[in-house]
Structure formats: structure tokens, C-alpha cells
Image (tube, rainbow, N blue to C red):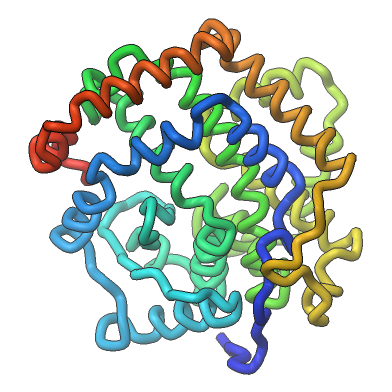
Length: 343
């Protein structure tokens, strides 16, 4: 693997590459009354401190003196994206293939050992760049909230912490947002690598495993067939299959990435023509329409599962007031309620 140490997107705003669906879904999610206050309060529970302790005790922190090749690739990705700070990187032992970025104030990147051990170095770099795209886009607070709520849904955390909250409605709304956020980070990874194909290769492996003899050309054709499917029943069925997942299907992600490149948005950014931080343009009418689209989707989810947006807002408000009223509880007692946050 070769790394170009001289190429850097100085001052690049995440708006330069973010998928319109991600930007719109984020704006729509924030429009749910009290959602941001809820997320901030959720992340204030000491989750970040406890999660860091779990990582320190049950994972390996990567650095110049620990798996230096992996650290060199990772830190270079952060440099290419011109991040102000390189988040800590950990590898944890698990047979699953995955990576994540979590942490409300100080994000950390976690990569599963089976991914590092079985993927090619360029594919691993694509994963690292993808996670740092989440960092630049500041996805991590919502991701942390989704992780906490998913553990409640799965029974790993006590529901008593969330008495009175419409957990299912909030969970589905955050899942919808998460799927759109992944599309942006795929673009960030392609920009860091200077080529979308290694990212597509990585996505193919996440779908089918690290098998020899796989053809990326065949997988891209498969992605096109999936996107162009016109059978109404099939499209309806896969919508309900995907709605409970934090990531879109790999074929969809590949198709979205290939389309972005083919429509001519990739090359200008690579040439240095991109939006800088602090110079983001005002929202357009098209963007407002997209926000309205996702707002309608979130409202429909909340209506179906939570009994209506106003009812959900009232429940969040009551929950926030109750947590403020319990301010006399020591932070250590509150953290003890969380139990073990390890995988």
C-alpha cells in the first residue's frame, strides 16, 4: 500500500462531501422537539467515561509503539482530512467484522480485530478513513445515543433508566439517520484514498466476507441491478428489512458511491475545489425539500410507534425534568446503573 503524504484537504468542510440525505436527515432529526437536549443528556450519563474504561481494560490502544503500521495509516487519514485532533484508536477482539466511532465530547474509533486481520491493508485504510469521516461530520453524538438506546432495546441496559420514554420511536428515528450518515462517510473514505474502488471493495467484503476470487466488477453490476429493481413487492420487502439496521445494504452503498463519482462531484474536490469550514453556503430550496421529506418520514415513524410527535416531545420533556430533579444523585451512583457496556 502506498500513502501519498503530501495530499491534504486543508480546511475542508464536511458539507463538501456529505450526502444530501445525511444532511437532510440530520436537520430533520434535530427538528424533533427536544431531540438534541435528549441526546446531550443521554451522553452526559457518564457513558463516555465508562466506555473508555472498558476499552482500556478489554481492548488494545493503537499508537506509534503498538501496531505502528496501522497507526501510521490511521493518523495519515486524519491528516489528509485536516482534523484538528486525531481521536484515539482501539482494536478489540471479536469474530465479527465491524468498526465504530463513539463518544459525545471526545470521540474514539474502535476497529474489530477480525477486520484488521483478514482485510487487505488498503481495505483497512478505507475503513479507518470512513470512521474519520464520521468524526469530521460530528456524527458521533447521535451514534453514541443510538448505541445506548440499542443496548436498552436488546436488554443489555436497564429500561428503568428510560421510564416514560418512547424508546422504540427514538430508536427507529436514529436508525434512519444512521443509515444516511454512512453514505457520507463512504464518500469521505473515497476522498482520502483518492479512489472509490477500494471503498467498494471493502463494502463487498463486508457483504460476502474476505473470500478469494471475488469480482468487484460483478458486485458493482449487482449493485446496479439492486438499485434499478422495479418490482414493487421486492422494494417494499427490502425497505422493511433495512429499517431495523444501522447501515444500508452494502450494494446500495456501492451504488450510491459510484453514482456520486460518475456525476462529477468527486474530481473537483480532489482538485482542491471544495467548501471550506466557515464558508458553507446557505440552505437551498432543494435542501429544504429534502429536510421536509425526512421530517415526514420521522413524523410517520413517531406517529406509528410513539403516538405522535407532540406526545413524544412531552415524554422527552418529562424525562429531562425528572433527570434534572435527580441532580442530587452522585455521578458514580448514576454510572453504576449502566452496568457493563462491553460487547
